Length: 232
Image 1: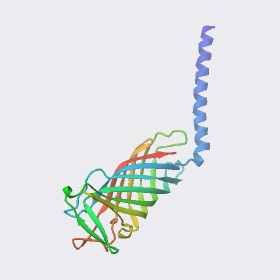
Image 2: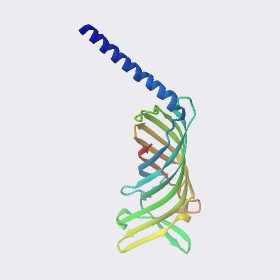
Image 3: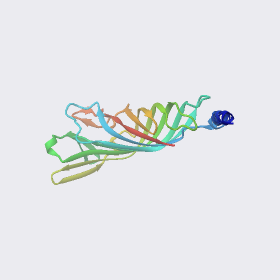
Image 4: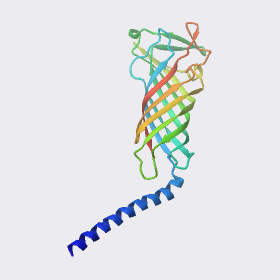
């Protein structure tokens, strides 16, 4: 009798395990057909300047905040490779020693020594169009997976200002007309599960060709390094 009980228990466990595997296969067959990684994203970055002139420097922490949504378009049967197209917002602060003055509608640029000011920053906002080529190890029932997303972002400038605080001076100037309306660069995000490393490398200058510092074009661009959170 005991032997029959053990044999029956073993067969029941085997049947239950087999049923679970079959259920997983059925889930793969039915759910994966329409599975996508549509996502909201939130990214926080540290903003660095590239192509600086010798007398131009950064000071303090320069943060960036980037939020938006991406539509996932799988390109293979396993739905673990595809592209993503989205819409987002980017707000950036860059603390540096480049002083900007508006003289009768023309912008004048000079560099300051660190002891000459309390705070000097550039703040700008863009609407972004992200495009990504996406590889991941995800499926329809496992959300902790590895990913590598690479691509580019195009941003349209919607506002920018410069703020200088030096002694009794607290000067705010709207400088959107001095900057390139379109900002674009390469992106890379990689990691596991929700939080991933993120990088943006700007391909064009922040300021347009008409703006000069010491008689030369201001060719500074941005490098943004930080973390990105993807939310399904």
